Length: 106
Image (cartoon, rainbow, N blue to C red; front, top):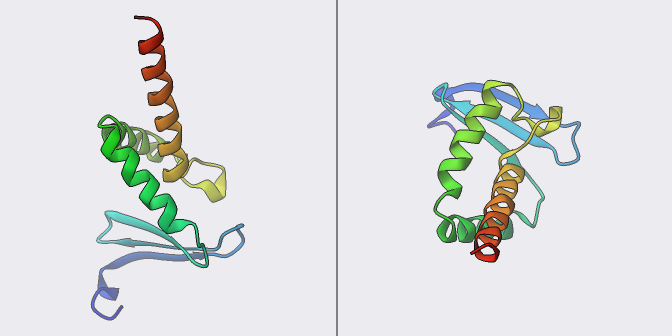
C-alpha cells in the first residue's frame, strides 16, 4: 500500500450494499472495485477469460459499451447501473443468440 498510496486519486468504502466494496482510482484513470468474502470470484474470472478467448468481439464491445455507460453515469451497480460482469454476460448472450440465428437462417 505504501508504494502506491500517493497515486490514489479516489478512495471510498461502499458498505451499504449486498456485497461491500472498496472503490479506488489510481492516477485519475484506472478505477477499481474490490469486494471481499466472495468465493465465486475466481470461478467468474475464469469463465469470463474463457468467453474472451472464444468470442473475439466480446472485448471491443465491452470497451465501447462500458465507455457509453460510464459517460451517462450508468456504470455503478450500487446506484442502479450495470456493472462490468453483468455487461459482459449480456454481450455474451447477444453473441450466442446472433451466432445461433446465423446458423439457423443459412
